[in-house]
Length: 296
Image 1 (cartoon, rainbow, N blue to C red):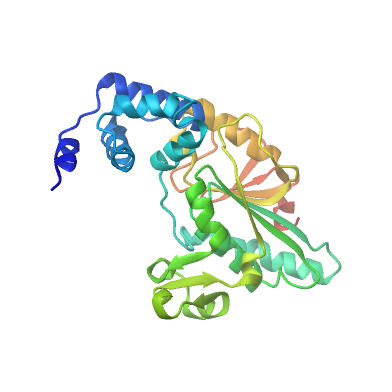
Image 2 (image 1 turned 180 degrees about the horizontal axis):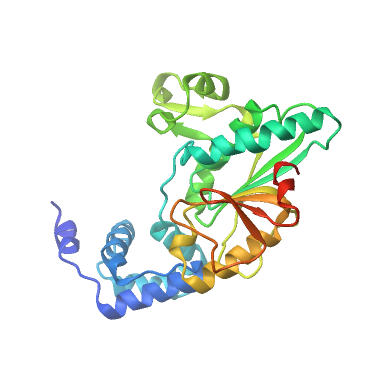
């Protein structure tokens, strides 16, 4: 073990330092860090201290907050370091089963009778992209993409590192384990040679997804469209109740009448926002004609 590693192993973050970083996270990401997150913050920032050759959290805080030193660029790196990214392809599969059977199939039938073929979906807090590409596979399998369709999926997150991976569409082979073999063959390219342990999303699927950095905690979002489906799963749990309410109200405002909202298994809209009808396990529809949740 190097001398620097030994020093860091014993380096504690003081109450004052934790409060300073906690307030920065709250100000710039809207995320509330409880006292139980202290060890997590220390561990994640510790890696950044080592990368910068720093020995104390006070030194890093000065670097982070001084526009002549780290400034805005380091703030993005800081936010990337402290945000949590747990995601998988087809995570919480009941959501995608509902989307396929109760939404996509009736929609496909309706378009064959002359319904419109324009679809907009949003994967908010998309992490490294598994969710939006799962949505893309669901739509493609349902026949809601390709010639004659104007289908787009917005994939957003606050973490620029995650967005870069989403943009690339490249994943280690162990990350695609939840994808059925037939879907894996149809929608991914296997790497060869030194890239043999990776897969890449096929260009036609990748073309459905637009990647954008969006901070859900900000009062306005750079979006100028409404969506037929919004996935915002396992993000609200990191915000306090006031911020949850504000985010949910904005999400509802970006839903088409009857549009669907999918939340994480530990999240709920009850007591926070009006204008939604509960359709199933963490599945909601904007209540301007709830039945229209099946149709855009």
